Image 1 (cartoon, helix red, strand yellow):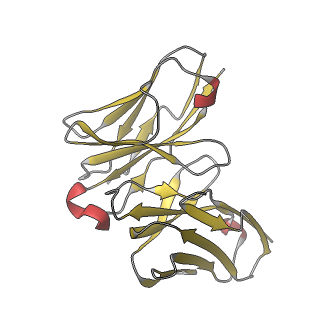
Image 2 (spheres, each protein chain N blue to C red; image 1 turned 120 degrees about the vertical axis):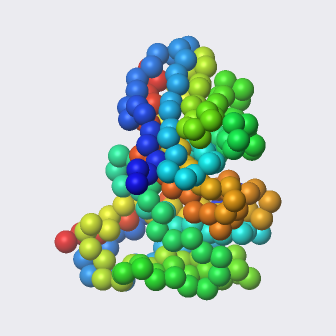
Length: 115
Length: 110
């Protein structure tokens, strides 16, 4: 049973460019959450997708957008990249029917460096 | 003030020592998670708690809902336990969204 997989693992982009990160949830999971983790800090919630819609959003600008596909996989898009967007981007999946009882499983993350 | 506070920020121990990492939170929660993060980034869930105590191998997690406090204990620590340990909570109103502490960097020396 594959866990949560993210791609790519590492990425270097230039300021002003756009980037797309991908996440496949754990088999059987239907909810995907994205987190940004700056160096030396805890992860910060970006947004969550369920039934192909954004259900919750953290305090991130509109440059951060996402999508969820019918197979539950998800993309995170960041436009007009800033140096401050350099971080580890983590994807977590869960099963909405489990509610708060549902454990979240995390991917290995995508390390984004903006130069 | 962060909703989730961890202490200490950094912890160095000798192999075999008993280790405690603390987590305090300021919101009503439905669940609290203890997570482990190794260099390279991947996060592994160690425990999910809503009350009482859980044990898995050398790891023990406790939570006191009234005091809004949780502890993670590692008995007979080993160098392979070296990692960042992160406390995260699901608030009563946030569904499955997690709010994380800043993490505790643990180094266990042989």
